[in-house]
Image (cartoon, rainbow, N blue to C red; front, side, top):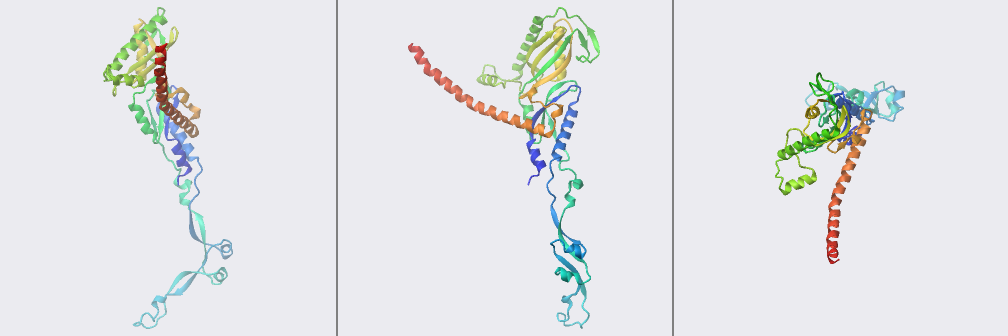
Length: 370
């Protein structure tokens, strides 16, 4: 029978996401969640200890109190050595042996022997203080990682969820980022904390010029996306993959930006929204640097925040104060229910499309008659 801790562990098996703050390594986030989950699992009520029957030596007055078996240790002759069974040997005193005889309590009190009582006692060797907590360690898998200076959605997995995490790696899912940039400065690592190598003016930069550069970069990345997809763009397969959003690079490829737009512009500061595949945070900072060069200026990246990783968004991410086991169970349950709803909607959508097509076909003759 499964213990409460095992039943709780089965509930936290799956995928969930947390919000990784900037300035914290992803390993520290993983270790903190592992510690929190272990604390929650081992805090569940432990099952009752198994019992065993033991003969306890008690005084007669105490042995009478419990309803157990009263035994008396007595010295009795060994009848297997009696002369009637051994014809060749002369009669000798029979050897004796000590046996515990079951006697009523009144008779057990008469001889001066050892009085025992059969009592059911807990097996202390199975106590949690002896064998330790039920869960000594727990494996938490990490999805697409974030470097120390980045923040945002970090997908994690527990137990059987690690298999789904591997599938997430193999699928062509895109990730969304918010990049905060600043014109007028260039550093050695493309971030605002790096060593400054150049300063420049930025008064000539307008939002229209910035959007033209973004459109040029997005067009170049769209060509790279088609190049690495290894699918004939004139085929039906390419059309179906594009409709389903599955068109992407075949296997591991260079970083590709599938979407790029400016959502805030107030020189020298600006904010970009990026959709990408196979990216790294260092590559995204370099993109901000290259945008500054294209605008005949310089730029550094002040912040990288991941807002979406596949189907996980910021609304699904658990903050630092909600990394307990109960919060993880609730998050996994919500994600599973949302997946079930999406599956039912996809099953119903073909029926709706067929109904709409039939109604359109039925209305065509009427329009022709009119």
